[in-house]
Length: 518
Image (cartoon, rainbow, N blue to C red; front, side, top):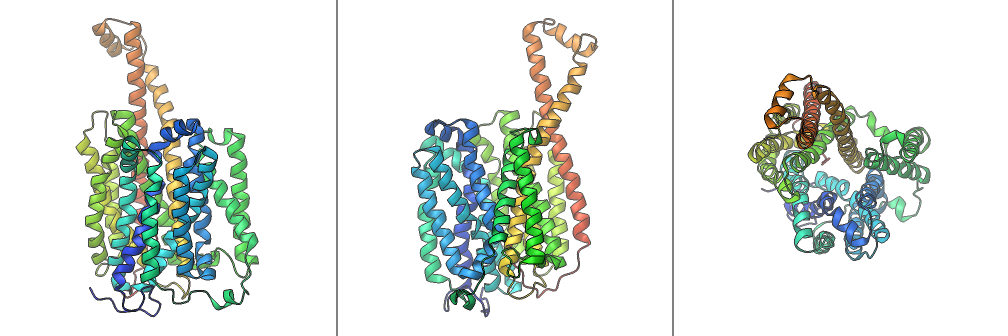
């Protein structure tokens, strides 16, 4: 498919623009894969490095915190350093730190390497998305996103399965070594095929760009602290813990300071918050947050349900997500073509409707649910996701001011990350709290005066210790299952509300050129 060359194309002269989509997808796959592949290996990491399970979870938190800090400032860094240079620095840092993670002799050095890895990974997606936006005219962008989006959505689907298989058959260190050859190949191809229309802005060459130190400090304080709160909150009983309370206060101070400083004080902000005055972008960021919330929470809940309720192994639980990944591969090109002919908001509504059907189906699960039914629910969900995410970007950037693609892409990715992190935290908290509530309610009926129960126990031999222990286990199982259903129902209602909001969006011109926000 021939693509007209755009003035700011990221493809070097004579290079097929579709190769750019493939090249940037490589690094994306590597980075997104790394956010989930380590989850199933924490116990092995803890045992090998002499750390507790609680200490090992910082392997995840350190990466996510660094990632959350770099994403909002990546647009500014691209403008200052030049997009291609900044992108290659991020790939090189991610690759080198992956090697350091693999050879880390202690937990402390592993955490340091994970911080560097998260910093490198945080700058990849915004840079890649603005490259695609500048390379592909609006009518071709849907297909370009289809290629890129496959990497984005397939990586987290196979991450837990691949991580479990590598850990079981080789060593947890190989989940990090895996990134090294991919990163090196990405650097070589980027240098050979990709250009930067403006390698380094003229002001940066003359060293006249003023660095927004205060803005950067507020970003670190706000998003670093917020990620710690979200990742450790449930484990530490939220605000009952002084540790969580302190970080929550720091996050609020950082967010308030960032808004005031970047909006009314700083003339060259590291995060372009005034860009939120663009209604399409602001609305799309809110939608990105909500659907990130729903998608990430269900991606965590389905394997967790399979392991905790159905006795699946980590590898079997990961296998539940793989058919959904194949459905995404099929649907991405379809969504990429459909966005050229159908109004984006209507495609988004259809995608959200499929997501709603999937969640409603999940709200009817029970402790005897079959593997095929779990897979079916996930596949329906994945059928709708491309129909939402591809057109979302057409709406988000249909009237974006010139030169703002880097900053807008950074903020869209920030909202995706925040939505996912908050979604996982809320889902985990609801599971615990609703399980306690259901267990208390069910226990009220488990007395000698409840005739059906008495008849059941008498048939089993009476109120023996063994029978009572079995009864307690059954109450716990049913309470936990009911809590999963509660969460799925809440997410279903949320989806229905978002469909209404989407249908209220303005119509978008067919010739509008979008930017990605994976």
